[in-house]
Every structure is written in structure tokens, then in C-alpha cells.
Image 1 (cartoon, rainbow, N blue to C red):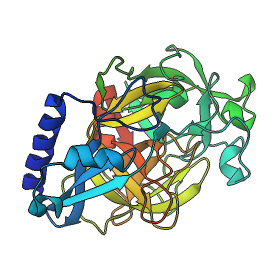
Image 2: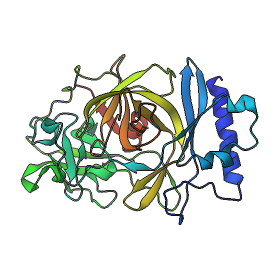
Image 3: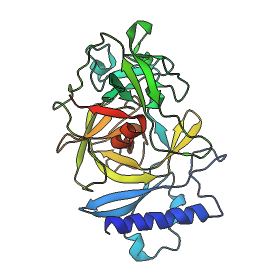
Image 4: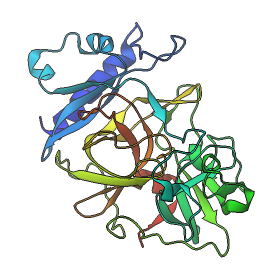
Length: 328
């Protein structure tokens, strides 16, 4: 169906969910709290999209799809993705790709970074923050999921990769706090200003520097290939499987935060991302336009068996934190 009709169907189902009396459960959240299915747009052609429905378990689909006629059911893309989790690193070093997990100077996108109170994530890219050179990553990587304070040190490599106080490279400058108690979030993002004399190479990426920003929904192309380089899985390729995804419930160490207007990606061969890749910037292969800031993922739901990855639209991240992107 045309993308505008898909948006209308999405809005209709979101209204049904908001008015529902019984809970639409998301399995795996312990039964004490629940989240509604995530709804978005799955590209199938130029200006054509199916309604993307993402569920924690197959049984949840019966509640959501009850009463829809066959014509509508033929325009939906239903996937069971299980639990979606933020993707900080494990607490021990991962064996590969080792070069991204070591102490690296000059800094460049893809290397291990982290607040002293977390494990490790990924340096996604570089920005200007109030005229100063800064690194961009997630709140849960640079600001310890709201536990950090402006002025805290950021280490490279992150603590999970044996980063210590002497590996300080930046100072936490700003982060978007999470909205608790059912509030909807748009980004999981933070920025840290580089300390004096710390060198950086913003354009050091597989294939060279990135170009101008991309807006995820300007053109919906099911064949669009995207890439990222992250601390754990290195350089991977995938494709965008849904945009404008609302209601993504993400687990953060026992707390669930919900996100709207997200981008969904699956790997071309297995997983697109894993724990420790949080903070990576995703770009389009065709024109090297940066598209999103990776922050969460699941182990189920990908057509190649590697789950799905979620990213904040990068244009939203830059707008929320008042940043200017630096490609090279």
C-alpha cells in the first residue's frame, strides 16, 4: 500500500491499542509490567510500505489483528522479535575485533568507549557541541543510563576493555534523560567533549568519510543497504526493515523505556549488531549518508537469523542535543 495509507493503518491500530481494556502483553517482561506491540512502516517499494508489527511472542498477534479483514492482513509484516535490550558490552573483553577494543589514538568511529561506571560501547562519530569537538554515542554508554553527571570522564577503551582512569579522553557534556513512568523517548544519546590534545580522525571509516545526513523516511527503499562499524562485531552490512517504529520497549537493567519513531535494521548475513555496538552510527552504502544511532536490539526476528537492531534517526539526535555533524 502507499506509505500514507500505511501510516493511516498504523494510526488506527495505535488508537485501538490505546482504547483497549485488556492488556496486550509483551512476553518476557515478568508479568508485572507490559508493553504494547511496536508499530512501524516496512518498506516494500518506492513510496510503498506494509505495516510493520513487532511482538515479543506470537500469541500477542491474535489480540492485535483480531477483526482485521483479509485485505488489510495482506498488507502487514508481522515479526516476533522477543525482548529488545540496550546493547552495552559484556563485562569481559570480547575476542574480536580486537583492534577496536584496544587503546586507540587518534580516536576514530567504531572504537570502544565508555563512562567509568559502565562496561563499554562504541564511539559513533564526531560532532560540534557549542563549537567544541565532541564524540557522539548513547546515554547508556557515555552517561551510564542517567547515572552520570556532566563533567564525568569518558574512557577509551571502555572499562570492559581494561580502560582505566589514565585512558580518559573526553568529558561528558550533555545527554538526553530517559522519560520514566510510561513516558515516550525519541533518543538514547549523549555527547562528550574531547579533552585537550586528544587527536581524532572523524573520517576514518571503512570506505572513507561519511557524507551529508540522511532522513530515514525521505525515500523508502526495500533494497537500501546500510553499514556500521562497532566495538564488538566490527564492520557489518544490513538493510532497513522498518521506519517510524513506535512503541519499542527496551530493557535497561531491570527498567523498560519505550521509544517512538525508530529505525529497524537486520543483517544481510546473521546479526547486524551485538552487545558493545551501542553508539555506532549507521550509514547508507549508496551515498554514505549517516542515518541512525544504534542503541538496542533483539536476538529474534531477523530473516537471516540474527535478530533486529534499533537506531534513533540521527537527525533527531542532533536536533535534540543541538549538535552539528562532522563527517571528516
